Length: 172
Image 1 (spheres, rainbow, N blue to C red):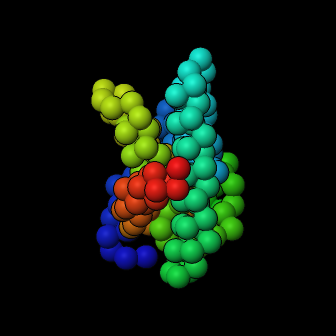
Image 2 (cartoon, rainbow, N blue to C red; image 1 turned 60 degrees about the vertical axis):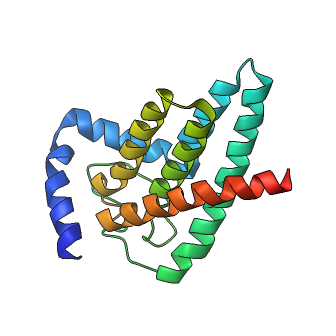
């Protein structure tokens, strides 16, 4: 583990000892699996609105594309080992089947934040950002990712968040 990642891990250790933050980050890591948090947000927003239903469909499809690019493409290029095989013993998290870099949770969070903010604007954009940061950071707290993995994931998600919607507009 790099000095940078080790320092970040050490700085986050107090969160692992606090019952409240332990619960928040453990839950955030779980609901970030398969981008479920983002699908749920999009589909709850869609209730009662045809336009928001179209946004939910687009977000769900785009998240599928993002996941394929990150998990079946980019991660295969790096093959970085995770800090632990199945996470810190204090957390009940799913054992990932892909490599560590970049973080898929962080990538999908940044990607979804881009799209949801484009749909809703601000001030709701601040809520999406806060949820995204918690989901991304949760992966370091539960020790499934290095801190540099989530930074790489955020950068990947932001990049895809600019590219994929443009491609969808060309197709539609």
